[in-house]
Length: 327
Ligand SMILES: [Zn+2]
Image (cartoon, rainbow, N blue to C red; front, side, top):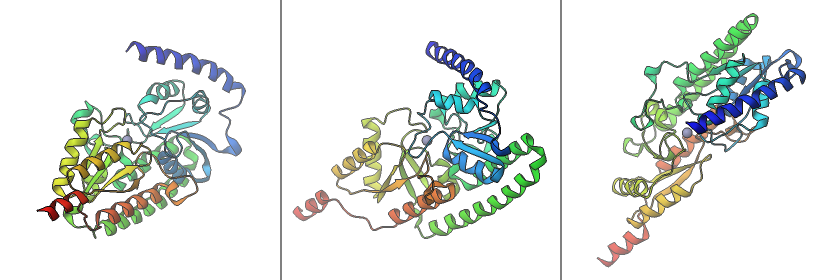
């Protein structure tokens, strides 16, 4: 706690200095009449861009491949946040190390919105091991993301009421696109046999995906990446994979693949070959300008990767084949 208090004091001091500077450097002056928005994750940035359209200039702090659980604000980030008209973040402690800085921004009078914070808590998971917190990975259920879209719309309509009809119309158009995405997901996963719908990933980012689309989901690390997977975790999971002959496990673009490689090796030692089924976008999207650099493109890419990998035929490891040959 002592350390947290120390960090908080440091951030507060840093903010006071930066705010004094930004008052002069016109950080909060609207560019060409646009609302200056800063978001934490690129997913939230993409959502805000779709709803604000031409009315806002949006910057996201976290780029491609960045893990939001571990992300700390740089001095430049604090300056950008302090110069924003509006700040949008995911919330539910996804950005656990930005909690204090976001609270300070709100306290300083900046319109600050956690898009997942406003979702009805009865719709959220609260895993036992996460001690009273909610699973923050709401973007992997399109139904929840549509709710987040409405929260963003309400925030803009409140901040800029004269353009409320524009935000409403943009939101309606975007929700139509999200409905098309939902239809695409259902169509793709319909081709998977029920027993193949097991999604094993590096960390627990896909629980809402599992609930929304009927997958059993197992993450090697927990809800946050702020903990290490143990040898026992790897052993236990490798036994499950070998026994149930699960054809593929998945790495994530924002997490080092070392644990999944260790898992694969452990499964092989049990005489079964599990493939690394490909790389999923979990807590970070693809590069800006590419298809996977948008929420919809990222989600489609994940679903394609999952379906293609899990529908492939199962291979037995060489060791088991050899053992069978000997017997
Ligand atoms: Zn995560």
